[in-house]
Length: 291
Figure (cartoon, helix red, strand yellow):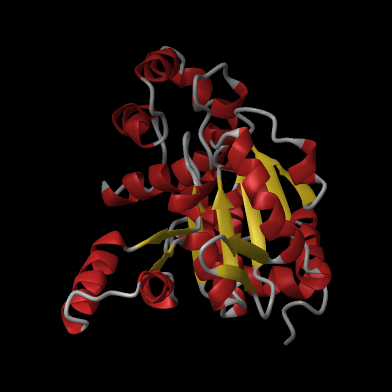
């Protein structure tokens, strides 16, 4: 089966990896593949943005190359660095071989070759294509780094001043994610297809739990999914995502529980809530949570 034959076929192969894509996600991913365009996935934490890239790589049989963005990330961390210690050793070896009579121009040319180039995720993606390149949490990076990405998204190529241009023979499938901690500039978004990911509805969350946790009973999966849906409706500092729902269900299973009651919930809330203020707020309303 051609996984890119239709959104429905792509959804089927993604399901084989444990990722249950709704129609909107499957269509967005299909169009990114068919049109060879980057896909910009935005949404609350825990809605499956990063997992989508991982599932696409697995289902399409491509390597996944991940660039985790953070404040202050720059080209040296994302694209390349020169291996300065090896370059220095090389110069000393050349000097010894030439008896101290080193031709400066020749020596300089020999330093900036692939031998001394340390490829970081973006450069590895261009050299490894076809692959899936995940640029994760681009909203954590700054404006300058966004601008730096534009050539790669436009041309599937980057320029290294001392080395030249590196261009992918086959464009990587680029997935960018954002938790919307800040607005990403229009110049970056214009180069991408866009999809907003919502938390799954109840039936799909139950299906995800049953797919990802073999042997979990339908009753426990439904109870956990219902409780997580209620938690998301509360005013919490960090509402739980699908990952937390999975952690909670696995914690309950590890304790030998086959249903979620007040006692089990009280002792395992740390699997699904990550702030003490949220824990206090929910413990005071356990009856409403499990109603």
